Image 1 (cartoon, helix red, strand yellow):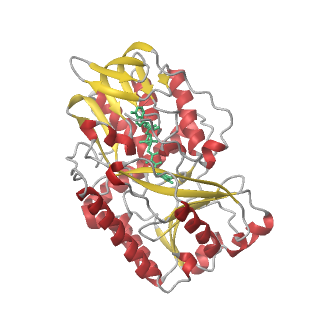
Image 2 (spheres, rainbow, N blue to C red; image 1 turned 90 degrees about the horizontal axis):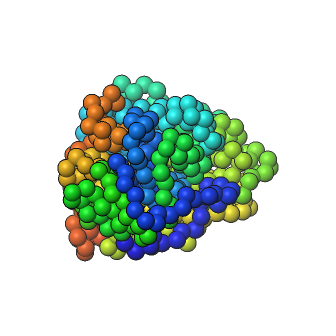
Length: 448
Ligand SMILES: Cc1cc2nc3c(=O)[nH]c(=O)nc-3n(C[C@H](O)[C@H](O)[C@H](O)COP(=O)(O)OP(=O)(O)OC[C@H]3O[C@@H](n4cnc5c(N)ncnc54)[C@H](O)[C@@H]3O)c2cc1C
């Protein structure tokens, strides 16, 4: 495996303060379960395993440092949304799947919130709820359709707010209405994943950072070759999400796509006053290539989304994208003219994991000694934590007391090899972009 490309630091990683990684692996260790990847999935699976079976020897092997991947760079929204949203999920997978997936995601958000509070994880948690705003008539129709769909499935905490109601919460002349969903939790992702690492360390999990896994053989037990050592393990977890294609057994299950984010400096009262954003709600819009944004506790505006990056042959070298960052800056000005002089202090990006049918997948890989999790798209913050509980049950071959996980042990449709792979994902992105353009064609340029 080549080294993972270095990325511009996210706001969360840059402002984390001093971080002391665990030493990298030198020499040989034997464990019961080796976990590859130190993001939310890997770290949460580690602490869930140790809590369930304290005598297990568990090690996490992370190529860089804990939180290097999407878990240290994301938009910080722990939400109930799966795939590209309610309507699209129902269209692709049917209403029953949407209903099962939504119940699972409600549990995922609650589970993460309970974990944070039970373990006192220092991660700036707030639970302000979620608005999906409409900025065109077409988006009003789309959101109202989603609200009706979810209400018809019995989810009656999701509701429509008219323009006046949404502007009472967050004031932009662009808002014509919004979907309201109260469950969402916002966190600081770098603080959360590293607080979970501390939790796992205290339970006896071993961490090896700056320890890329290079090669794995599986007989008679797993032999995992890292850059400086070797691990023998009875069982193995691939918690590598958007990097999973680097492993031959997972090569065609997912591809990486890239989303970009920016953060402003701390905003002044003068800049913030017109927004009236006292509740700190998390917001997205109704586009296919959504914008997602929030205010941090220290009053920076963090915005991500818009253009999505794709690379030839799954290259991971696309964490930077000047055009996407400029687009996001313009979109801030479009929504909130009072922020037109706000200084942008951070620009970053990272890969998210996409399956052919845009839904997550986890389960056994080959026999029951190996499990994997991938395909959370931009919605893995809450999901990865409940997925970790499912992975724990699969590894311990236990009857689960969790709600049925609709993503587990399904056959994953393989991505084709190049050039067909790029043609397929390129066509999906073009379709999504054209639909967004159609909805926004009458808006001023900055909105697109
Ligand atoms: C910019 C951005 C914004 C996002 N916003 C949101 C959001 O607001 N809400 C939401 O729900 N989701 C969001 N997501 C998605 C979410 O962050 C992910 O779904 C989630 O963090 C995935 O966690 P993970 O542990 O599965 O993967 P990751 O956090 O990516 O962890 C995988 C780890 O594996 C390591 N690794 C890879 N190869 C090897 C190897 N060979 N050996 C050892 N280690 C290896 C990597 O270094 C990495 O640390 C966003 C993603 C991005 C990129």
